[in-house]
Length: 215
Ligand code: VGL
Ligand code: ZN
Image (cartoon, rainbow, N blue to C red; front, side, top):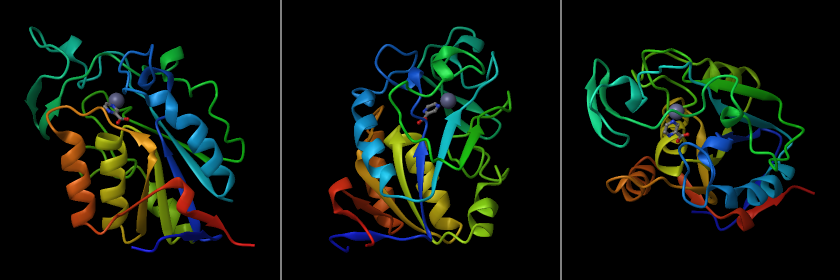
């Protein structure tokens, strides 16, 4: 693994789901999720091209424990597209919890991609819904823009970051996850599993301080 990465114009930073509901005080708080914000702000300044994602669920979304009678958050149920971890209601369209965290400061972001808007299926990855078949259009967008490497930061490391990294790799991009700009939910060993999987897919796990801007 290279010890430092020189960021160039064919690189894009994907900032995943830095929203109020995923920070302390929110509906699905990622432990210490707010700590990534200053790191992400600094990393984003090194990139000319940044894309933000926003988890964006309609009320009564199938991933919410509240729509499954007798079920509690973090239990797993089987849905037509496979096992689904049930979550507390979170990131409901148009609510304050779905807004970006107030101190996220990435004014030059070029695209905000919303995901998870289909009431019947979750979408961890920024590239595909959880059926792994229905595209969000992001791969086509990134290809058409000519990007070759995708750097990923944000929340949560073991869900939306992990699946986005996996799919970016499958779509043919070189991928690096900026690990200290992420935090994990960590249910049932999901953080370790994510690290193992990223290594198996040759996704680089890098530190923010290893990124350099071309002069
Ligand atoms: C996420 C669980 C449910 C995430 C989104 O952004 O990682 N996790 N919805
Ligand atoms: Zn969600």
